[in-house]
Length: 103
Length: 230
Image (cartoon, rainbow over all chains, first blue to last red; front, side, top):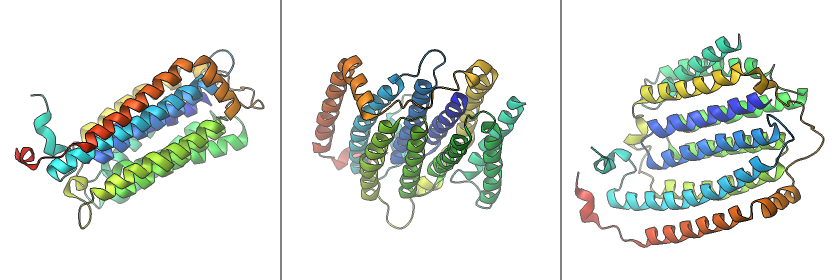
């Protein structure tokens, strides 16, 4: 059962990664990081429920709660930044900000 | 046997994801659908022998398929609002999976915080930045979809092949005592406030810093003259 949960969590994480790399909309890129968080939550809880040795513990669920708090903080800060960037250029295209990259 | 099935599954999923990316040829959408259904069937064939009790197995397969297809539509949809709505579907499926592992409090918290609070914020920002008349040009075409899908394919192939090789991992302590619930509010709260008190404090500081930062960012006036560089 553990391997099945890990498979689903890994697939969700990978879909989020592919979306983050390929989409060009700033908001969708942030949404894809949240999708990666979902995969990680499934992994953590599955490892806590079906541990490789010993009894099931609550540590995975507690870690996931901390992850929820960090995700909320990240969403607030990231969306504030996205709104600021949108007000500068009037577009959500990440290509509009390619002058920021290191060359 | 499982490794061959895994490779077929990952290839089908990768090709389907590539064809479904925005900016591809439109008539390829049907082929992408067929390939993805094949990948889903292979996933069912792979997962079914691994799982434990009968009812849990059925629920797990159903929720995993809903979550993965929702995630796929979210990544590939051309309209950002629909992406956010499909992400809510993913959250519902995830919290169903958490209920299957008896993490009931965490499932409720995930549903309330993500679907109730974070996604509403996302929807507000999406609607505020909505382009007039249909989807924007940058939503019509993906950026380097082939390289992105290949990267994801390699990552997932390495992870799952490693996973399929270790039998002790898939068997593990599969028959964890399924009668004792682990994850009620009382248990999680006790664990959180006895063993992870320092973590709680640090989380409070992080949230405070994020709030102050968000207010500081939102108060800045955007000056238009800096924006005309390109």
